[in-house]
Length: 338
Image 1 (cartoon, rainbow, N blue to C red):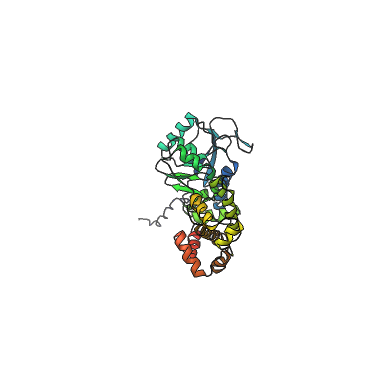
Image 2: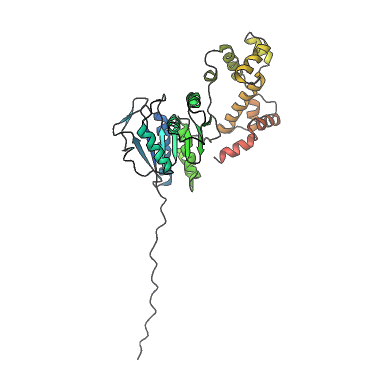
């Protein structure tokens, strides 16, 4: 007699844990006399991203030419994790440049950078790190930036390179920034590119007490004295007067009188050294200040317009759109999107 057996229990499928996010390894090549703030701002952004995500998304490694501690421009010394001869596989490498630029180049280091580029490893430059990438002929055809003090030196040395005055440039697999806390902005933008990255980057910025993530479109503020040197004290004095009177702009005749020059002399000075009329320059100062307030405060557009010397929001919006290419409200919306 056949015995009926109960149906076999279904075999449970083995539990497959969710796929962990791959860890990205970012290397930081420290050049002797490197800038600590540029290095630390980038590394801390990555550390905060790990903290926010509650997992290791980024691993950072310090790399140097040899095993000796690398001295920063402020005297601090950092012990490297690896040298350029034993560095592991990287997902990106950032060259943290010296201050001031060291014109002497290590041939072995340049060759190593070229090898990384050949392997299609993204390369970055922090502060004057862009200079070393240029020396290795790795910025040809790319947009790049560098600290405003070094822009002219980079242009003179490498006339074929596309150099901007932006805070940072992310051009395909080349990431360059002007230094200082701009390396934080650049790194946060790289984090924001990843899945769920916008939320992680935003929360990381909050932990870093960063009031907002500055975008790549923002320019470095180059002091007028850097543009003019010390040869035009009268022009610097006039611009200083303009900067002190943005809410209630002065008439051109009044500015000339206060500086003991004629209106015609003022116009010649501005045309020769700033390539614009005094009125145009004054308007740019007011619009630039308005942009800062739009991005860094919660003030209403109407209040910003009045505080920067515009008679009405409509007139302000028209001038702003003509100069920046989008409206004040559009500016805020783009900033909110990162």
